[in-house]
Image (cartoon, rainbow, N blue to C red; front, side, top):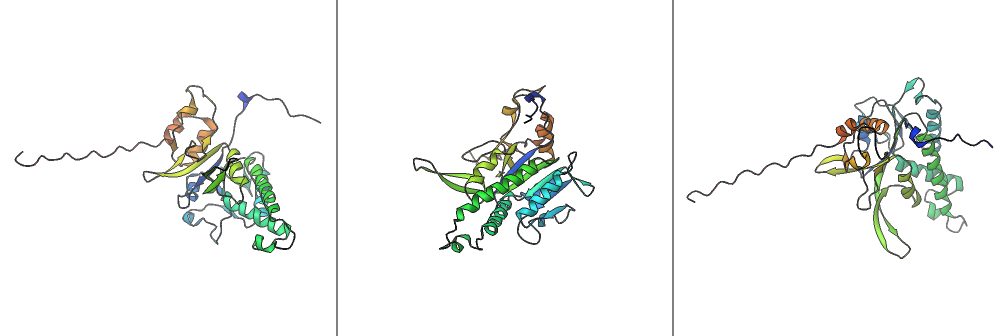
Length: 284
């Protein structure tokens, strides 16, 4: 059996960024697509507009996907071109999965059909001898397959996810609350943040939409970066806690680690308005 070629880490040249962007409802996750050059969307949200209503003033191409198999077929087609992500002669710089949370739900729906579960899975298995827990490993594997293919396409890949709060119990019975990407089951929310090169958390900071870049208070976030870059020192420590949610700039920076791009992504601190001087009472 042939073994892979031995390589060196200093020879790695990452061509494209892989990002998981998680945020609470109404933060503006879909608006990230507006900041991307040549975007393509794998749209699987519910409704006739597939969650893309805020983009109706633009001409953004998208694939409406209603099943996990459709998502997988589209992903395989996009991976076919090994030079550049393309479809029918059109080329794309950024591919969005909107949303990864719903993709997980589609995987679960596929498991229901595969194992013969009804619409309401737990009710449909009573007295049937079927184990509904089988659906979750099936769903997990389908999502892994999808992500593996999408990570391999020749474009920047951004998986958009809703954020959920879950209670996790350790071996001693202690319970803690964690913010995780929203997925059915318990395995994917813990596994998925470890797959992409960046996990960014959408937050409102003093009324501004920003991405958190570092883990804090049981919210996982982070970016894989080299310890240093020629011409700069310790880029890992130089990353600000928050960056501006501009998809194109973020992906270009993750390609080059150019400090000038990081400077553009760094929010300018807003100075607090100075208090007006208090006039002295008359006669004193």
